[in-house]
Length: 111
Length: 115
Picture 1: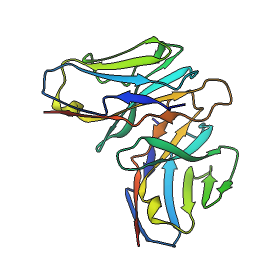
Picture 2: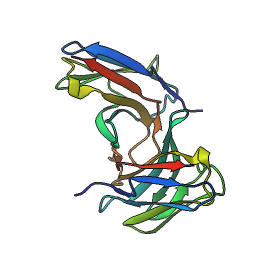
Picture 3: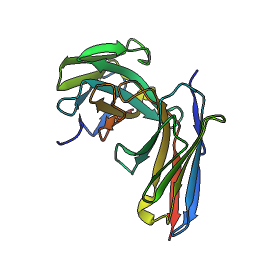
Picture 4: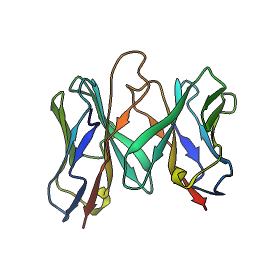
């Protein structure tokens, strides 16, 4: 069945780059997502990548997709304390079908 | 738009009681999803609707759980009777519909504690 795996914790120093990794199993997924969850809040879409792309850059965020290895990564440049949150990797066919989520990576940024 | 609205934000109840969680999707959105988040299992789909019709309820744990969407602006998730293992954060999400839709918009969640 579908499964998304990601490491549970990451700690970085303020100003450094953070890299969060994810592996997924459904090679037919159309979209791969990164959602961010701040304490006590819902999930907010951070960025997404279409499955026929290798890379997407959006300001401090860089998403890399390796379809052969079913590996997705999120790089946050110049990480700030405000980036401390849980980051969820997810896969899906569209926004109108259920998404399959990883368990989330808790990013802690040390000042 | 106010975004997806969920109520209550927190619910504490005793085992055996009925619990009703509510969701108002973003106006104009055709799809509504209910997810449950636990430490052990992460985020899992419970059920989703298209134009108020349930499409897939295979994630609903058992008969104690039921969900309805009587109109385009309101959905409920009911647990009767509730059990301690139902303690979780329940999220509602909605999406626009259409072939180019990629995003689901999440509500703030309802944190349910069953004692």
